[in-house]
Image 1 (cartoon, helix red, strand yellow):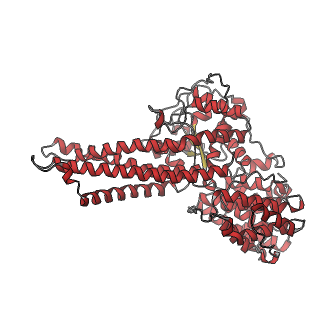
Image 2: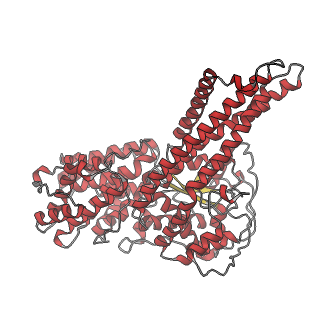
Length: 634
């Protein structure tokens, strides 16, 4: 699958969303003006002028302005909530974070599957969330960019799918992450909330006006509420059409991408067959899923009309992957879940109680589990372990799932071989405010040093997922510590820049909210200076002729050769500024730059681990998935 064309398509779908939204708002504003004219006319004595006479330009401007302000305010508030990151969206939907050190077999298997798909996709491991007590088999990915993404599945999905089928569903969600669908989903949810809020407001006014209507004083509130509710109902219908128009084809594409991640079309088809033969299907009972239903793996509610459904029928999705399907579904025994949580009279309390259970707290927080055995092979789940990269030892691979161990492993990558500098660094680590970090560093440093250079990248990606479990004060102290370790020798080396930016880019969004920058440069010629700096540094890093490597990379981009910059002009500061500017390229241009970087690095017919890490770090800063560059050393 070409994820970069998918990102470009998602950007064009955003333009379609804006167009459809403008048309929908224009229609709702016109209906609101008609309602106000009829309402004013009905309140006048008989024999008055016709209701169209009250459709004045002054009234039209007033009503239209009020509607625009109302819809715009709701969209802005909703966007503020949803753009806080994938974790905020998942928790808003009722999801709870799966702790990295969980002993629950099915949750551990779920974490392992997410980590494996992340390594296969060359991206950081996203946050892992669960919708507890949801028997429907569904999942979604949320976030603004890959660096703040999370994956969330229902408990029913974990209980009823085999491991390879779970991989297929997770791979489907990773496709949405890499293709930029998550940002589109957030924009769509915020936009549609502005449209549907009119109906919600009308419903509230109707109910608040019932008491005054029943009293002696007749109130006009119920009629106003009824009118707004009718207008809002039309808005809901329009919102459903917009959701369906944008999301249906993306699901077909994500199913195909899941085949690429898992290398197993049968697993993707089997997952859909299990869902198709399961009575609750993909339905989710949480009240807040309506506006975000287009982001799920399957339809969260049944749809009476196919043209308003946000997802294609399961049958069509299976036939796209398995054209020779005989029409038979796979059946699994159904597990029944408790409907209520003790003491959980609000969604927030229910989420906290479920989180307490996941964290290993008193099981009395929730109702007893159903005694029905899981249809999934319990033995295989119990002994499940993630498939580690071949050069990472199982002990190190397991240690990287613990936040403190992962923090110590990353700190070990910054320790110097120079005795004096190392002594200074160890003193900084001993005096930092992360209790136990120094002792963990002593235990894990030798294993980190023994890790081959071509596996450092996988180690960083796994460790970052665990470091995100630190508290905010712990992370701030840890970031200050890494900066101090880098400055201990008063020189910032290129490998230190690479590692620090990888860690910063993958962990920072968990704690600090940063606005995603819109693309700015439509042509490579607009960033010719920055491209020259980046490619020159890559050409100098190899053992071959830098002039030939640079010329080949520039030719690959189709640019006029500006001449190789001397190594002295390719400082880390200039390189960092150039990479930051390249992050403003449009989606289809970013992989071209990454490919040209690989050409420059391959001028000696080999790519060193540092060159590979550098390309991945640039891709991370550019918020761009790494294309298939056939990099060596993997």
